[in-house]
Length: 505
Figure: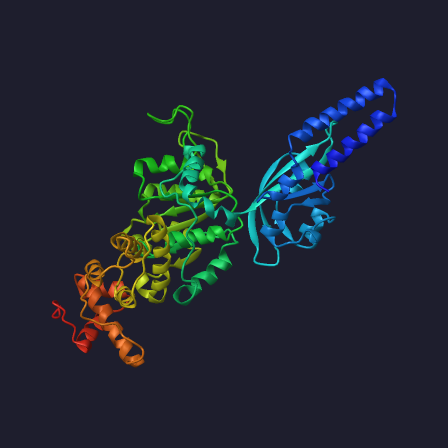
């Protein structure tokens, strides 16, 4: 029975009562009730029907958490039938049946206040994450009667993709400016290449992420060190706490100390009159990522060492120590051992940071990941510029032969350029790629149906050496890029009869 029909039948009952009882006072009261129902009825609003038609999942419990009602959208969104939850207690569904984790209803039952929480539903398919808004309903005496939760899966927000940048801008405008850092980025890009050369890194991340151990991430510029740091944070026990990033090379040395440790009011000329908390304080109870740690001035290295060892800092101009609970991630593309030998990096700080070392290999050592990376970047930029694009098999072959001195960052920039140059036709000429990579188109791709394994390996070595030597001044530099001895390169030049202008070097 719908709400409209129910009210209509109640009005009929009232009309019968009015005609049966001659008491005028009672008749007036019954007539007043009938008029109120008539006003409500004439508006034609059937609230249950409206709730049944909503796209949002509606979930209602009583004051003890017993499930009273779910609307049809709940089943559409989660795949869970009403019979699975109706007349069950929410705590049984969370703790015993493991149907949910998170959610707003338990918080509303506990605090009797509205709550907005993330929730994961474990239905018949893959786990489904969404957001839930819980609202308490009270009677006239202020006693909790029911709790209503409205939720929507995160995947349904894809329709808002066009408005997403506007949404982020609005959120950023609501965020206090002093929580931003020079290297602040969203954790939207996950690490690509979980097999092959990166398998050991993934295993290490899974082992160390849940701990509070300091991690030193090394590798060439553009190789993906920050993505590894993001994965460590994402898989850590502090992933709901602050994640503050700072690029030590991007901030002038005379400002770096105040940015890191903050200052008290009147600490120096031009300082904020109220003082300012540093990034260490903003990262308290969370994670602090120090990028380009090898470029930190020597005098600050001493203070950083003390902050890590003692887990406390003192603001500039202050005297009261501030106790901290921070997990540190340090990143560098420098050879810190060479810097120690040159006297530009403290040995004790190195050993304090190098608790868990992770080396991120350059892209030239991850050839198997190039196709996956290309597909991901094509997806991103095709969507961004509304231009479909694809690489031919031959073009992909050329990309795999390149030495990638700029690593993943260089590949990303090239794919963006190619998508823009496609002019909406979906492809580019091979000559454009050849010009970007400074390679010759004379070399045809190797096909597995007409060449054996040894020949393919030899051809790959020759192409890799030729491309690397074009971008290097001498064999020593080429050897450093390829991580092999210069004598090995010299022998390979003779073996493959490579035309190298500095053969007599």
